[in-house]
Length: 381
Picture (cartoon, rainbow, N blue to C red):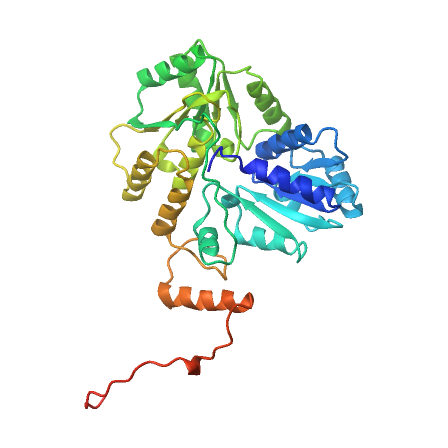
């Protein structure tokens, strides 16, 4: 689940692989998460003879070229990167482990491209909210599934409030967070909303410092803003859902989600998981436009968010998602959708037989051995 220590599993697996003389690729969906993992890996493996590099748009073209060459000649052990690692010129010499973090952000084509890097590579997929197709793959036995069900010690559940936009509550919550020494996220669904939301916040709470972050910013500006926010230079970060994936800032313990009806279920859950990553009680406010009627799907998503407020609810959320959206196509590209042609039971049965056969588990019985009782009822059919 969010904040339960999936990165720790990846760190240990990467360490074991690197010491076995093989290379590791860690693929992440955003530049911010790439930067964070790079710092974490460097910090943890300090003093060990492991060469770690990163590839993303925060890295210059010259540096990226050097990293790709290092992968090809085997001088680099671990590379953390965004979709840049899917480029055709990334050819690791001796790949042993592929880690896909926040798997729900990658399409089937991306994942298949990663698999083709090398046939006999161990693949470790990390996510708190698996996409329906991935969950189905795990439940059908095509993938092995491990659940981390215990939260870190002293972790408290995030209190969730769903309410119409109310400036008074927003001001109170921001100031309460500031006075207890913390910081706040304010997430908007669109880049175009950021300007007027920031202006409204500066007018509403003039005593706090506000910064903006989104994916269209120049790489250098984005990195500077995030570094200053990490170091406590700003009280509020107004951002798009670029912060959704895996960011770990224990000092941020209040999050506002503007126009919560415009986000998907897994997105809302992941965004809420950005806070409450220390021993402090965290608060999430999902604001809605006052007086607007929500669509049935948006209402259902917010209802699920309200009910799943305990620690470790990510797996039940993914199961809800599987029910709402359907499992998609395990052999094709659709990652959600219901099975129409053969029916779910027959599909599951065919799938189980195929998995058993691939694993060599079927006992060689032919269909002729199976019989069904025939009952004569004396009527022409």
